[in-house]
Amino acid sequence: MKKVLALTILMAIFTSCSDSDTYQEIETPPTTGTPDPDPNPEPATAVTYTKNVKSIIDANCIGCHQSGRSAGFRPLTTYAEVKAAVENANLLGRIQLQTGQQGIMPQGGRMSQTNIDLIVKWNTDGLKEN
Image: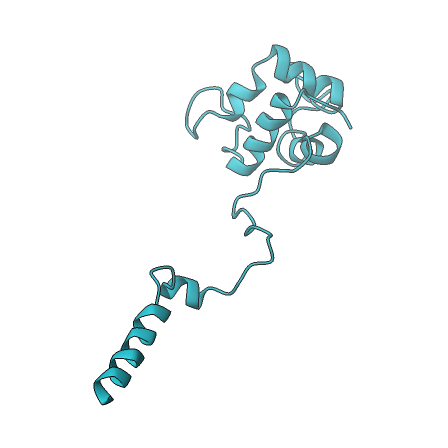
């Protein structure tokens, strides 16, 4: 009788443990159905000149690229001027050059990759103003 009882207890223990009970499942709290946020999120909406690009251009380019500064510098003070520089003057290529390469903009050194990526995404999203 003791053997039957011991065997029954052992069977109950072994059948209650399944392969699906891993340490990860035990230690990980249940989720609410919402995935973890992306550590490097892309902007959810389209990048626009007014919301995203203008402040980057103002901070990195306007020092040289404003009307009346120098005959050699194309003004980049308005949406139309910046859009034209992307479409016709290789602005994207010049901001993506590495520091020390001829033609890099801004001349003082490469802007952050985050800013470059936003300007590239603005182009990909259709160069929208607002």
